[in-house]
Image 1 (spheres, one colour):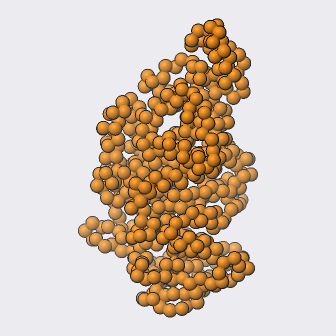
Image 2: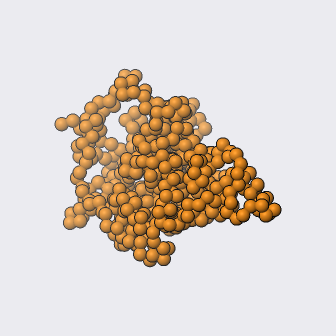
Image 3: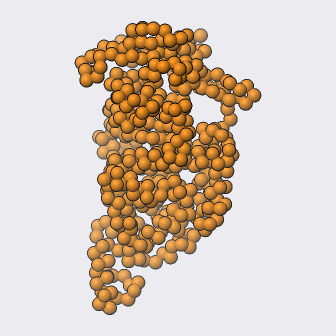
Length: 501
């Protein structure tokens, strides 16, 4: 797969030590499989697809360094561990220079190890020092991996996770998924502003933002699919292609902003199910009662021309409820059988074990796990505010590295919870898991493979499992903005969710 034997040894050494816990979850064969599915060539040089994936992960880990600093760090780590001799190598020469040197060697004019002279090409990966890799070579190589490759890699990694821990993604026989979106603040470079767009806040200044929509396994907080687009594109439009990848008996819990007739039928056509809050503007026609505050309704959208390719009406189930201190609300779902999921299973939010203080939330309210994922990804892991790219391609590369790092860290946390019998992986601290992984890196780099397998990896999982987040039922965010009436424009007002005392 590599034609550059020297660089292959360098990267194998690095991944077998410094990134060993992640390498077990992301082998070369998986990256090659993703490249084949996406129709992307692996490449035969030192900066091929496998190397670029691991450089993306290193860029997400070392958010305080520039791309050039990340490249140099790789060689410094190996040099400090006495696994890189620091001598110039033929593999660091341009291709033309390598051919000239090979020709001279065949004629006996050059001794082994002697460097050939000659003009360096513009993108010579040596830069000024033959032991360092230039940022320009990294940029040129990175362009060969389109966004489709990263989306496919996340998809393939998600399949592998389901193969090992599919039982953790299911509630009864349903595979539970959460759908939501967020905006990501980007550096204020002109190319990014032109491609992704900016906010329109004149007082605070315009901020460059990209929009991300994600499908996630809320019972493990493991991302399943995601897409990145300009800020001007709406979340429901971006969610459509993601929902087309659903399987039979998938159950998607969504935010109220995704209440769209077309999305509902796209899910229905996949023999899947959804649950979403009922907006105040929607007035479905009552059909019959299914139980206490549980009813069957018929909904016909007001704008029929927009949805003319779908059936005229849709039969839905509405479950009314009210949480203390908040206004009445309702859950809408196309799962109309009360025997499959009861009203209590949909909306309960109560303490079921006073001694253990175990919070048993309703099925729909598992949707909030994706909000925690965005918090961990953007704030705890440092994706937002620490991106370095100045082009859309570079931003897509960096964000893909962050998503992969988050997925691999979450996978380690699932392993830690399963292997150490600590129960729910959502009880483990994500910030402490990343801290333990970073603190163990020096020991991983200096240890041999046998010691890593027998001692360091089990130690890492045990330390990750030791950081548990305690159950604190009854705690909530005051969310002061929910006590104010919001002006939605055009004379429309939105009442606060919380009751004003």
